[in-house]
Image 1 (cartoon, one colour):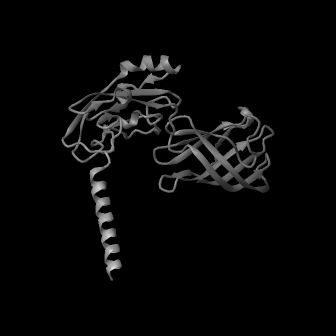
Image 2: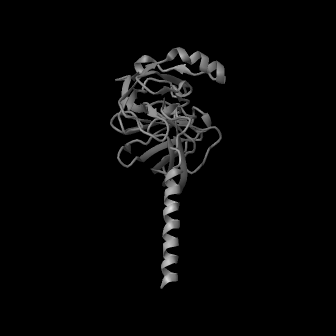
Image 3: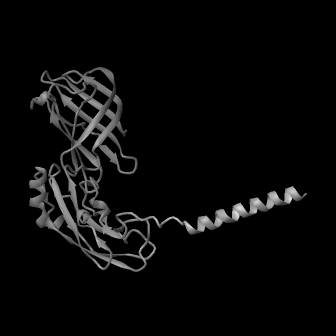
Length: 292
């Protein structure tokens, strides 16, 4: 029993010394070089590259301020911003680009001041509201927004400007569609000449807010320079135009007596179009396009 007691006492002393030693050698509080810096998260890398659709309703893009490091602010930190179109020329020169400014009529910025609250690392979001209907679909646009000041903290000038950029605007119909349907063949005298099954992929490419070019037609694929276009009307009916092999003598148009439609809920096209061959024979196509 004596030996056992001494062993236990030795263990207890060792543990106590370990605890005491540990208490005397507490690790330093971990900090980062960025501790307390205030910056724009959107200014990182390619975060300013945005995607917008050709729409007449506003599309919101968010920006704001953030607190760097492992801690949290103990008081409110207010950050102010400005739309900084004067920065565009220098940006283009530095990167060899040719962006143009978004027209003032194409965007609004409701507020340019925001706050990072105590215990938070991000400010309340601010927005740019873009309206793009009247922009050039192929235009390369830029909108710089700069953080100009903060109420406290360390201002990070290297991440204080976000260059919001777009290189192409898409309409809501742009994309690939699985296509199935039937081609009805007719002789020049109007007599039926059989049918063909259509199974293809249509790729619609933006031309304007309501119009697209189409890469393939009927069951012919991409047919020797054929020009094939669709326009979606405000009531979601559709109109076709173009020419087979780019020949005005072989026009593409709507089928008579049938209405082509677009369903804005399912994004499905149900279409009825036709083309005429130079020999006078003609083809009717009934198709369903389902977005991929």
